[in-house]
Image (cartoon, rainbow, N blue to C red):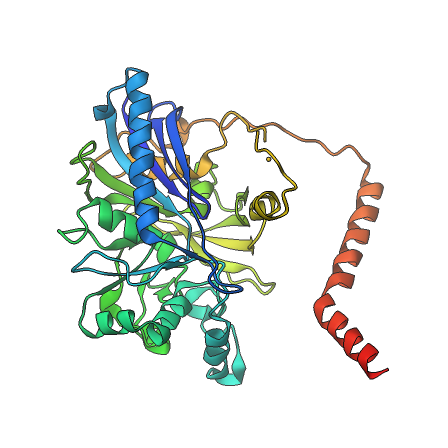
Length: 419
């Protein structure tokens, strides 16, 4: 049996642990556990960090049972990678190991007033004031404003920061810290792809930026150390994989870019999960968009390797709509929501590639000649160009008419009241 690589894929709706053959990229086994979300108020979305890490352990244990049934020795697993929902924010106590608040999920909107206050203190009230450093607009999306909200509203977080006990991280940091020992020597780190989604990271210097931290008034002492996406961060302390290195870390969309083999400038992937995300590899230099796209760090596959950047277009709700219809409207009665291609786990595959190719692991060859081939079903247009152009024009017209409908509807209602 060839060497195996494990991949933790911790997404917004579920956690999975998958095991791949490092030579063939074949998926050997996996297990998935759904994550419960809570909605304390309208627009608020939270998850329990302890449930997240427990789901990781459960997925690993169930996968090991399946491997045992296949007569596969788990000692063949030579490395583990972590792919994660990005921007979701966790703050915990490094002495007790306990979260100081629930994880605030990336699509949470509670920080809207925080964002407005931050924008109002910029020259010309410009939401793109920090974009030259971060590649991002000031928005509810990114981690810095979530940390700011926690500091402003949660006394436990405030006290932990003042006493030097608070640790901040996106979900990858929380998982790696827990798996490498937690309060007993756990490694507090993140990778460049996740760091670039915080608004505290300078995408040119490739490190935390003191001016950005001062702007948000966030202590740099609580930030994780920034690493590349492919290197040994620490060793697993769990019984079944004791001593196995965690050596890959990528935000889920970057992991999918790697898993789709988009290593060349101009190559693009689109992913449909809880949200919908398009990433286009722009090479070794960041490209700023004038049309609303985000500039982000795609990956850095090794300490000495250059970083690759991407332009990103994001839609917050895509697959999550189907779950909402199923759970709240009862429209979808069974999920028996689905037909998948034989290899759809490109997010997990991407971080497995990063972990397996890390220096000191070297069980996965990322040279162009050795990359696994992704088999795809090709779809060809069934209508002619004129008909396509006509339909596209009508679609754009419909989108234009739908813009600001909630404001227009409100205005009409007010007008009716006046009459």
